[in-house]
Length: 228
Image 1 (spheres, rainbow, N blue to C red):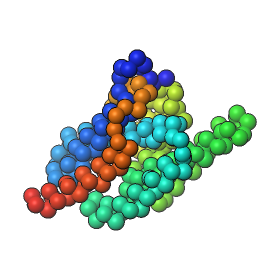
Image 2: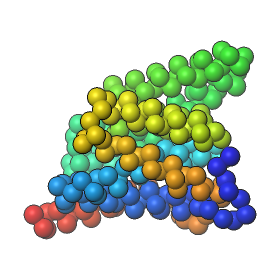
Image 3: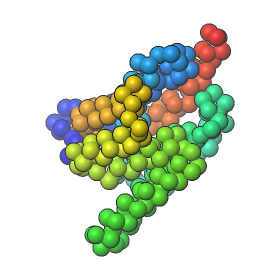
């Protein structure tokens, strides 16, 4: 188990705040200081934490459909602005998370309904299928984003297997290996704060993390216009 118990460690809210900080640094680098490799490297921690929190949310949500609807609405509503200020060539992070959540639900249903061996095989096949869909419809982080989220659920209570899966996926997305161009390898550093997850929700408005993503990009875009 990830939880350290006894009220120690980091709550889900604390991990999300850390992911938001990492994402903010990443997007400051993207929009204001594109020459800063450090800011982009620090930003690699954000998505793995959000992927883990998606899996955590799925395991603890009282209403899967409401959770999915929230992600879909933000994905659709924010896409025009995302395409305008970040990139028109792929879908925003809410689309990645929504697709991953659907994949997790499908994999979970098959694993529950089929005999153990068949269920495990079908579960892996579903993960591969949704990674392909993520690549085809071009969500943010493409197949890799779906794979991180799906394996976060698949190995949620097996941190060593999750670390191995994320290592292999990160090496795969970085292939061919070039040590001077492997900023994505810093995503694995997210395993350190995730290892301190205490299983508690913590303090933090549910909507903050959705609104922050949209609002910080708007603020950075306005700063970009003002400064440059």
